Amino acid sequence: MNFRRIGLNFKIARRSLANFKLRTALAVLGVFLGTFSLVTVSSLSQSMSVKTRLEMAAMGENLLIVQSGTVRTFGMRTRLISQATTLTTEDALAIANSTSWVEDVSPSSGTAFVVRAEAIVLKDVMVTGVTSNYPTVRNFHPRLGRFVSDEDEKISAKVVVLGHKVAAKLFAGQNPLGRTILIRRVPCQVIGVMEEKGADLSGFDQDNQIFMPLKTFLHRFVNKTYIQTIYVRVSREEGLSAAKKEIEELLRFRHRIGPGKRDDFTVMDMRDVMQLKSEAMTMITILGRIAAVVSFAIGGMGILSIMILIVNERRLEIGLRRAVGARRRDIAVQFLTESSAIALLGGFFGILFGVTFSGVVFTWLRYPVATSYAGLVGSFAASLVVGIGAGIYPSRKALAIQPVDVMRAEAR
Image (tube, rainbow, N blue to C red; front, side):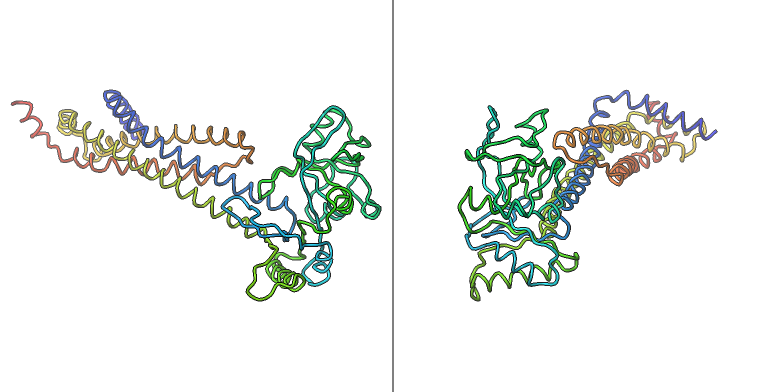
């Protein structure tokens, strides 16, 4: 019996809403936009959070980065504000020997060069000089061949390890190992190809670079004695803050920076960069949820207005149903069913289009696919709450209609 009543309520609701197609569509649209916004923002926030964690892991475990000059983080990006020529490999050695928290140190330096392989020319390829322990410190390993060795560093060997994208561009479909490329017209032998890594937290494409021994890079390509970066691997995560403070004090002493003077280096904790990115994502999420709340409010007002109109149009029907024995509860349930049907219809299409749109964005931006189940459940619950909330006043208005009053009005 109850199922029959539910079926009858939905049948009446469908017929009633069909008589107000435009108004119903507008009411559905408001809920649709709210649900769509909530699902999309929740899914993208979840995906960006996963992406940031993956980037953090890809940078290296418990990593501090000492950068020559002043570096500032702006929202999602880190930018070099001023340069310096005071950071050296001796500083890297001092850092390795100065604090118990430091497990390993890898100095590096890089610049962009034109790279050639037979008839293929690549411009602005980052060539980075590194030490043999770079793969361990940065958690970035060769896929083919080998990485530069201590012996390569010792004799300033002209050997290179290609990034994934560089290898694909220079030697598409071919084995690059043992081949020769020209960097600044200097022939270099390919000894390895790195695994695919993607962009780091700063947005730099790690696959579009070439690695060579640091000594070879400094002496044969740029003729410099200073370096740009020192990667510091800390033994335990809880020691990152202490190690950062000790490194800053050490470098200020070695660079003879007096009290009150600005550092000519920057020590970056990747946790701080991740925190800034998380704060930026949180702001985006809040703005998206505000937009969803506004859309739900508009949808709720749309449902409220159409339900009031429906009640006024169906006064005779309501009076007749009351006269033949319909209970007050039946009338209330009928109008709550109709308002909820509008909201759930908008919620269903909002979730469907939100999930589809999120999938398209994930593919386009190459973000990890992540589904926010909390967002889906929250969107459905919000739709239901809006539908029920918008139907309460019209239901009470319908309950106030007395059969006698309707009959008198019709008799006139």
